[in-house]
Amino acid sequence: MKNISNRLLFILSCFTLNIYSVFAQQSLTSINSSIFINFNSMGTSSTSTLPVGWRVGAGNDWVGGTLATTQAAGNTGSGILHQSSAGGCYNFGEGINAFSNERALGFLNSSGYTSPKSILYAFVNNTGFTISQINISWNYEKYRSGSRMWDWTFYHGSTSTPSIQNTQGSQNFPADAANTTIYSPAQSTSKNIELSGLSIPTGSVYYLRWTLTGNGGSTNGQGLAIDDIEILPLNTSICSGSNMQITPSNSPTGWGSQNASIATTNASGLVTAQNSGNVTIQYNSGGTTRNIYLNVISAPSVGSGSNQTVCPGTSVTLTGSGASTYAWNNGVSNGVSFTPNATQTYTVTGTAANGCTGTSQTTITVNAAPTLSINASNNTL
Image (cartoon, helix red, strand yellow):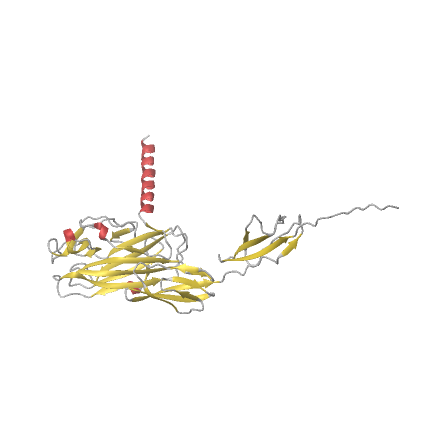
């Protein structure tokens, strides 16, 4: 009985862990539309719970990360950072800590809180589309000086230990003269990168990691954080002749196309695909030009056959061409004979192997049946 109970507890704990792991990742539900993440929801507590999808840890594995900060401090007034502030994972506040609604997540390393330390984020692709590019931006923020040099490095990947480095997300913070300067407002450095060539299927998880490392040690830490993260998941394949609305969250301007013969865009980010090929769509966000690398694929040229004129009761067969699969309206099945009752226009939608569609129409005219008239006459001899 004891062994059975232990097994049940083990199974229950594994089940609970799996449920916890699944629901701790943030769900992305809209393709080509960005989400904006800050840490203001953490409040002012030193042990604040991180937003959904976020974890911190000494290692590179999101699964083993923790879900809360260990310290909190502002950059003015009561609760301010200072030279002797304890090391830890910090809930930084812009202003007086107890009243600040502007928060950031980061670290102040020390002999008791050693580097490297990582901030990790996981999302589930619930958009219904394969994500092929992610445009991401964020701010590195500095709250306190430190006499050791520090480096942020950025990674991404499809496992819980993301290891694909993108050097455009790196940032070096040279050593300061002392640990005594508190920055108010916090110093801010913006990062804007495009992760292209991805293939994140619907239902799968993807991970981001920011790792902070001290140069040769962990003492004399700088108060460093990340904040204001924008993530724009993109499906960059579009069929010729169709439209795609792209909606970044940071009031983008200056939309344009590098090849209008392939695709154009209006001032609101509505892309219209003209012809097959690769094209770069650009927009301006926060003073930085961002790129979207579109692949316009050909829509099929669908045929439906010639118009026909038939007599009542005559069966006809409609067969589409130019695509892989076909769907007709008015209850017609492709390549299956039927008998039309009246003149009707039939529309077929053909879907190619690449997923693009095209339509075509044909009209079946049903002539009226002839009326037979017999006239009889009497002849007298």
